[in-house]
Image (cartoon, rainbow, N blue to C red):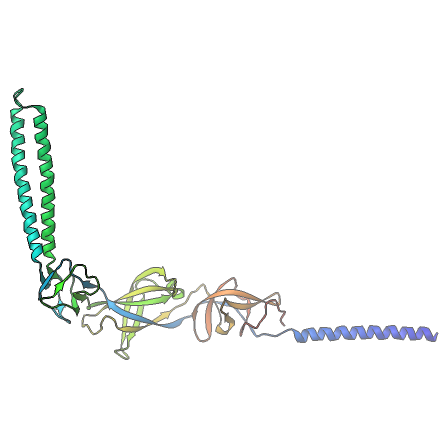
Length: 358
């Protein structure tokens, strides 16, 4: 009897110990489950102010090189000279070219004379051929072929003469558009060569109309439209604000900087701005209405990926995202996520994937 009581006590003791151990393991598991502050993903846009570097360039600019070899006889402009389209800028002299024009003209006149003589002979033979047996068909055919050959030669000589005359026109250098001479590298007496492609004789820039060039990040470029207003500031004029409208987009994302070139026409009639000046563009980005918004601290950026930690089925899951507009507190995200899902508000790369959370 005493033995049975002892066995029963032992069984009760073991069961009690097992239940106590199971309760301890459950408590330990709950204590080990990490707790993260989460926030619901919401849909909307993030308006932000973006400041980007930009540069002013001339609307039109051209470096003027010699088309023919020659000596500079006159330079009628200098650095800073305002010129108009078609205005004579400088003159060259090329004696060899002048002789080539005269030679080409002489050859053309000789070819015309030969054509005239042979044409007259052909017409006479053709008239005589009306009398049977007066002219052989071979002689008439030869005369006709001679006229056609002389005509082709005369046309070729005429084309060569006109080309030489056109080359003479290059001895007078004129302005292609209204603008300002910004570079002068020649003086009277200098020998210039058509083979020189390194140093221009003159440089002409249109300064009354400028282009503001800025590279917009691809996340912003997609939102831009023609005629959108852009504000910019120039370092040389502290506090002064200029505005302009987007005139053209490249419609091409640069592979190296992931940005799209955008240009704004700047009308500079008082010429207070100069080509080459640097500017700061300020753009007020409205954001993407289709975007999802999370705290900026919820996005983790590593060397390999950019992601948020979403809580799904009580466990952490890293979801790759791309970002859009952002402020100091919030950022737009795009990826395989939905509105209303919970994400870790202050995420970091130490959070493991697949971890159960409280």
